[in-house]
Each structure stands twice: as structure tokens, then as C-alpha cells.
Image 1: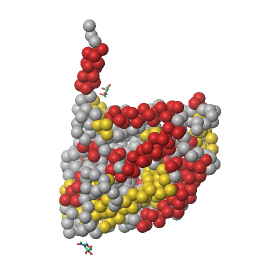
Image 2: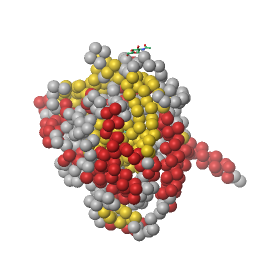
Image 3: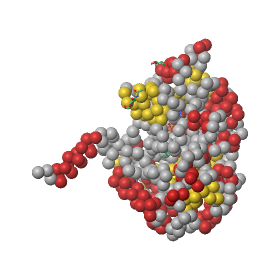
Image 4: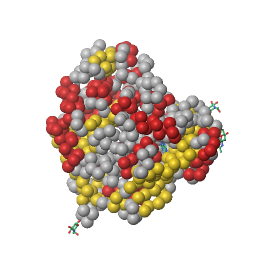
Length: 583
Ligand SMILES: Cc1cc2nc3c(=O)[nH]c(=O)nc-3n(C[C@H](O)[C@H](O)[C@H](O)COP(=O)(O)OP(=O)(O)OC[C@H]3O[C@@H](n4cnc5c(N)ncnc54)[C@H](O)[C@@H]3O)c2cc1C
Ligand SMILES: *[C@@H]1O[C@H](CO)[C@@H](O)[C@H](O)[C@H]1NC(C)=O
Ligand SMILES: *[C@@H]1O[C@H](CO)[C@@H](O)[C@H](O)[C@H]1NC(C)=O
Ligand SMILES: *[C@@H]1O[C@H](CO)[C@@H](O)[C@H](O)[C@H]1NC(C)=O
């Protein structure tokens, strides 16, 4: 007789055998036969519209010469191309070649640091180098990239193309692209160029303003030279305050501290100010920032958190969300968000250490291969985090009004934004106006908002309406610009009209890639060249694919109807009205 135990054991063994994949994130490119018949997605395994993209082939050049010949061959064959990276972190469908005959050119093996010039303090890297490699190699030479995204898994080519940034109002600002002094880009060419044209652009060439933030539509960036600074030390202290004065303090705080940022927990009426400054290198301290949310995490724990969240959502348990929110906020605060004074323990503020050990992290990328026992929290192979992200920047001149509008919404619905706090609230970071044509237009605060996404696209979220109203307030009342590498579709509606140099960008695009081999449906929509970024269909507003104009864009069968906003009457949001609102 076969006992339960034996069945259990063999099932368990079987599960183990089929989970042969390792713990580091999967390659976002999967091919059914050797580098042909491929699919691509992002690191979360889901694009905003939940589709998976296809490509006929994927290629992995290891040298610039090889890259040039691949671009030439594809250009000659009039094939659509797209650059893919090792992890493909961008949320929107930037990486999809149109149709099914396209070519994916991966920069996975274009990952060498080529030269560090100590005299000029410049580093020249291949575009597939990760932020982490760049930071480490620069530090070995006693140099530093002053401002950077907080997650080191991004590639230089990818983070430039989407305008990625850290936080500062000092110097040239926090966007990495504003420290590019030269780059090499390989674009389609005519027969006279051998079908590929290689351009080395430096600061004297205005085309660099197009190429340094390009959404990948100008060709493949092969090499990038960045201006660095001498390595320095920083001193970090987090201070918790009531958020009453946030509107007044937000702008000036960024001027006072070089690496300032703010984590805002609106339903808890709290703001955590990061007081973070450059200090003399002879100050003692060897602090380390290993951001908790970017650490390798136990899959069983992730599943537990997700199940709790799913239950709270399905029961409409707002109070439960607020309890989870307070717990998360307190836990992160008491564990200093992952800061330690010496790489081992946290003994108190300030945390002092070298910039390269504090600026970015992402230790889940090199967790051991343990058959998915531990993963990055958003790894799509396990039941873990599954979220939507809304990220936009609002000019400093109006940011106070925006913050106060959000506070008015919270006064009307005190528990509404507990849904954010479980994802560590709203991260506010400083960005400066840029010379990049697709860069920031004004000095601004970037708001990074992460929240629950249902596995079922037709299921509304708790306080759906409040978050939709905040998004529309930002984008349409305050003219916010979306982060090109994050967001759902509606955030890009009209975005290109907010850029004063969009025309200059399109001129360069016309010159570099006149037939749009590096463009796709998504980039054409974002750049205002063809069709609309929004997708109008049943339930489309539930996941930010559209702004509702009819009830069917929400979920009328579940009581969610398309209604005006509560304080921004021009907003159209999916509002729960047929049932008694849960308290
Ligand atoms: C955990 C996490 C934390 C993050 N933190 C931050 C943050 O602190 N600040 C911030 O601003 N953003 C942040 N982001 C978002 C991030 O900036 C973007 O998603 C980033 O663009 C992704 O970089 P990637 O290397 O994965 O590029 P991908 O997403 O693979 O590519 C982005 C685009 O660039 C194109 N591209 C890539 N390489 C090249 C090249 N060599 N030549 C031409 N085109 C190219 C691709 O075709 C694609 O269109 C974060 C993302 C994650 C997942
Ligand atoms: C691609 O792979 C899928 C899955 O194996 C298969 O069904 C399909 O026929 C393949 N297409 C081509 C063109 O080979
Ligand atoms: C060049 O392109 C053709 C089709 O356009 C393809 O069949 C061939 O494999 C390509 N060669 C290389 C080296 O990529
Ligand atoms: C540290 O450096 C500062 C100048 O950068 C100097 O004034 C100070 O004396 C130094 N302190 C020590 C202990 O060396």
C-alpha cells in the first residue's frame, strides 16, 4: 500500500526536480530552440497589459565589432530590433520588437569596464555593465559616481535610456545621464555605411542630448564615458516627523542636504527625512547600506505576506492593511532600513561610510542557487510581491499644492493610503532640470508609489479611486512627467507634449533611424507618433491601462463605477458605490 507519506515524499521530490532553475533572477529572454523563437518580458514577468512579447531571434554580442555587424545585417534585412539587458527591469513594453520576426540584441556580455582615467576622473564602460560593477570599479580607483539609482542591478545602457536617477538638487542633479561626457551609438545605416553607422558623441555634439535618454529608439549604445568625482564619505541619519509641514518643507529640505530624500506615509501622518551629507573623508566609520527590500528573501515568507494581503483585499479589510502598514513601517525604521555602521550591526545614527557602500544595493542578485528557497521579493517564479508602480516628478514650484491635495484626500479617507505603506510609502526624491531632450524639464520631486496588483485583471483594488485620483492630480493638474521605465499606460498620456525639446529629439531619431527599426508600437505611442498609449477595454481603468469614461472600464458587477474625483473633479476614477464602504 502506498502511504500518504510516500506520496507526499515523491511529490516533494518531483517538485524539487522540476525546479531546476536557480535563485538569481531568470533571464528575461527565453528561446524555444537555440536563440530562435524567443519571448521576452521584464524582471517582474508582467508588462502593464500582461502580454508576453515575441522575437524571432536573440543574439548576444561580446564585442563592439560583433554588435556592429549584427545591426548591419538586421538593417539590411529591414528587421525590427530591440536592445535587451541582463534583467530587463523596465515596467513598460520598451523592449519588445514589433511583430514576431524581430531581433533581440542582448548586452549581457557587453559588460566590461574599458578604462578609468585618473587624471580626468572619467570611466569608460560597455553599456551592459551594471551599476554595481561601475560603482565597485570606480571605488577601487578611488572614484565615485555621485548620484545613482538605489538598485544596482540596472545596466548603464538601460538606466540611461529611461532617465534613471537617485536624489539630489545639488550639482547637475541626480540623473546619471547628466554625468555622461561621451557615448558611442550604433544605428542603422545605408549601403554607403555598410548598413550600420557608428557615432561617437561628446558634449560638443548636441545630438548627445538625444542619445543620453533615448528610450532605446536611436540604436544600440555600445560604450559610455561618465564623469566621476573623488570617492568621499557620507553621513546618514533618518528622522521621523509628523507630515503636517511636509508641503512647506519638501523643497527646502532638498536644498539643505546633498543626498536628501523623504519617505512619506500619508495615512500614518508620518514622513521620514533622510539627512544625508558629504563629510570629510577622515571621519571614522565604515557604514553599509544593504536595503532590506532588495535583499534575498525567503519564498515562504513572501507567500505568507502575499496571502495576507490577498485576504485583506478580498475582505475589504482596510483596518488590517493599516495594521500591516504600521508593522512594516516600524520594522523598517527600527532596522534602519538596512543600514549598519560597520557592515554587521546598527548601533545608531549617524551612519558614516564610503559613498560606494551606501549609494545603491541589491544583494538578492547574488543570493545562492538554492532552488527558489530565497529570491528577490518580486521574482515571478514564486508567490511573492506583485504590484503596480506609479512614478512621476512634480515641479518644485507646485509640489506643495500637490502634497496638500493628497493630504486633503487622506482627511476624507483616513485609511486609504495604508495600502501604500506596506510597500514603504511614497519615496520622494529630488531631480534637476536636464539638458537631455527627454529629461526632466524643471527641478522637481519624483514620487515613487508602489501598490497591490491583483492576479486577476478584473478585480478592483482597495481604495482604487483614491490612488487613481492622486495619479490624475499629479499628471493632469500639476503637469507631472512620468518615469520612462516605470508606470502603467495612462501615465504616458500626453507626456511628450510636456517636453519642450520633443521636436529636437524626433529630428535626431529621424536622422539616426529613419525607418524606425529600433522603434515599436509602444515607443511610437509614447513619442506621439502613432495612436494612443491607452488601451480602452472592459476593466481597463483597474490597472491603469486607461482613464475610465464609462462604467464598464471599471467593474460595475463588483460595485465599482466610473465617477469624478473627490477633490479633483476632472479626475475620472473607479469608485466603490453599490456596497456600503468598508470601514
Ligand atoms: C528594484 C528596482 C529598483 C529601481 N530603482 C530605481 C531608482 O532608484 N531610480 C530610478 O530612476 N529607477 C529605478 N528603477 C527603474 C529603472 O531605472 C529602470 O527600470 C531601468 O531603466 C532599467 O534598467 P535595465 O538595465 O534593466 O534596462 P531595461 O529595462 O532592460 O531597458 C530599458 C530600455 O533601454 C533600452 N536599452 C537598454 N540598453 C540599451 C543600450 N545599450 N542601448 C540602447 N538602448 C538600450 C532597452 O531597449 C529598453 O528600451 C528600479 C527598478 C527596479 C526593478
Ligand atoms: C515556437 O515555439 C513554440 C513552443 O515550442 C511552438 O509552438 C511554435 O511552433 C514555434 N514557432 C516556430 C516558428 O518555430
Ligand atoms: C543576417 O540576416 C539574415 C536574414 O535577414 C539571417 O538569415 C542571417 O542569419 C543573419 N546573419 C547573422 C550573422 O546574423
Ligand atoms: C580632517 O580633515 C579636515 C579637513 O578636511 C581637517 O581640518 C581636520 O583636521 C582633519 N582631522 C583629522 C583628525 O585628521
